[in-house]
Image: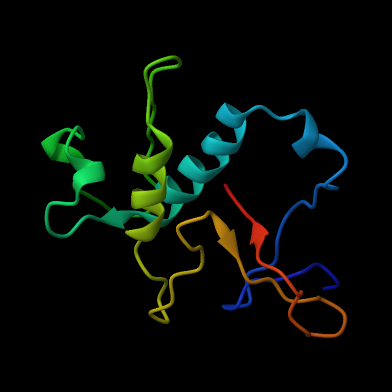
Length: 123
């Protein structure tokens, strides 16, 4: 009940100190966090954005809770993940919870006030 929560009321499960794990993470692990959110939310790519040119045809649309993978050294590029984040499906209330930077507005679980800056979230 005291955990920070997203605009739709979904509480976060774990909080990592910015001086702890994220400083020890490499860029691939951060991108995996973003890809996990995209897979959880699902996506719908409309039009022909340049960043999606190399995606297989079957990956233009996906329902929530997808299992996805990407090759280790020749996998999804940062611009592809940012594009997918911008195409995530809205929740049942019609809200997109995470922006193209992989960050979301979180609210303090005790006061209900929003935190001053968006926070990286993933799944």
